[in-house]
Amino acid sequence: MNFGDQQDTEQTAEFPIAEVRDRPGAKRIVLSKMWWVTLVCVTVAFVLTWQSMPLTGPRITIEFSQGHGLKAGDALRHRGIDVGVVQEARLKSDLSGIQVTVELNPEAEILCRKGSRFWVVRPHVTLTGIQGLETIVGARYIAVSPGAPNGAEQRNFDGLVTSPPDEFAGDGLELMLRADIRSGLNPGAPVTWRGVQVGQVLSVGLSPDAKHVNTGVRIDGRYRQLVKSNSKFWVTSGFGVHIGLSGIDLNADSLASLALGGISFITPQSEKVTSVRNGHVFALHRAVDSNWLEDTAVIPLVKVELPETLIIEGSTETSFLGIRRRKPFSATGTFMRDGNSVSLLTAKLPVIDGGEGKHVPELCLRRPGSEDVVTIAVPDDRDVDSAMLIIDISLDHAGDVIERAELLRRPTVPEDCCVVRTVFSEGRTSSVVYSIDREQLTLREECWLVSDNSNADLSAWNGAPVVSLSDGRVIGVLITTEQGTAVARIPAALVD
Image 1 (cartoon, rainbow, N blue to C red):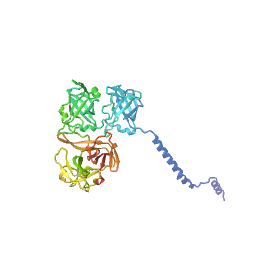
Image 2 (image 1 turned 45 degrees about the horizontal axis):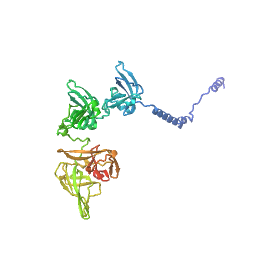
Image 3 (image 1 turned 90 degrees about the vertical axis):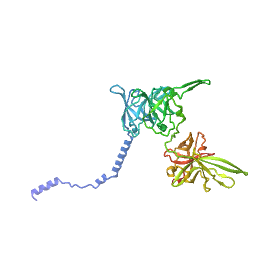
Image 4 (image 1 turned 60 degrees about the vertical axis):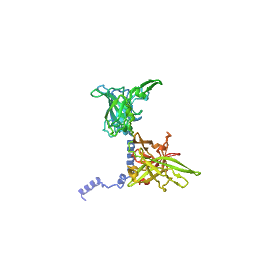
């Protein structure tokens, strides 16, 4: 070996070359289950932290002319429930009022709609009562009357000086009444129908030409069908005094009408009557005309079409010790049609027990106000123990009837309904109703027992159709017995 080879060998031994190899356990560390457990724990911790953070809703700005002691931290309430909180209350830059920033709860975002009204609740004493009594000791708060849910979104509002008289009026009917003088009317005055308050006065002011006094009123939504194109309005402000031999008579509607004034209205009977919309203008009379009250229209407060009923008359016969007795009875029924077949729907009728076997008597049918009487015989094979009686009759006897498929519905749970009966009065027929709330109904087999605390006599309604207030369908027949009142539900076989 020469000297060069020996030198190369020494250098090679002095500077070794490393050989890089993959470590067998490296992939195991990356794919270890502990890393996946750690990732899950971090994700869960992040979700819990996010959920624990307080959620905030949108912010709105309300401008008031006076602050009335309002400050940050005070509540925004609707129907006694906190729906937001005041974040800041400060003076406007021009010192013309205050500007309040309110942060709504997330679920109260629907209040950011055009038409929402805000006002500061504070103690307020009037001749008709005390408002905001809870704020004498507690903090002030802002109340809100929501606008239409489908209204345009809005974030800036002008606050009201006082609470609006129609705070909980709902979808009412706004009208304009025009008179020559004010007649002592003020905002908040009651609007009545036969002495029952059905609305309120919203505003009183001069017309644009200063020739009349315009009074804005709102009729509550459930009473808006009372107003027609021929309705008559008059002032009931103040009180009257009559001195006679029997003494002194004072006439005043209420304390509210004495303090704020009052308006009454009625709708006379007329063949050409149409409904009215918001903004319709009526004349406001100083006194009532007696002719308006003598020919008043009958207007049902329900919004569904009511079926026409007829009167069912007959008599039962009993025999005791060979002596026969006859007892008249009456009931109410409804015609319904299925193709060319017409049926009579009514309650269970009494049976004749004259010693020759029990059977259902013959029936006399007539419409209210009509002298035409139709006599029909009930088939002997009819189930006399059923709570409801359905009789097929001739089409000629029925007149105008409603198709069974469009008339009947079998209910599954108790619901708000009314009993309908057609009556004849003052030369015309009209429908009268008796309302039944769902809370008054208790399910008992095929019938609903009706609990009535008023102890009203419903015997004249026996057999009358029970109409649902949701869709106007007949869901049963009213049954009155000595044991009580019940609603016999429409059988499933009639609606299949």
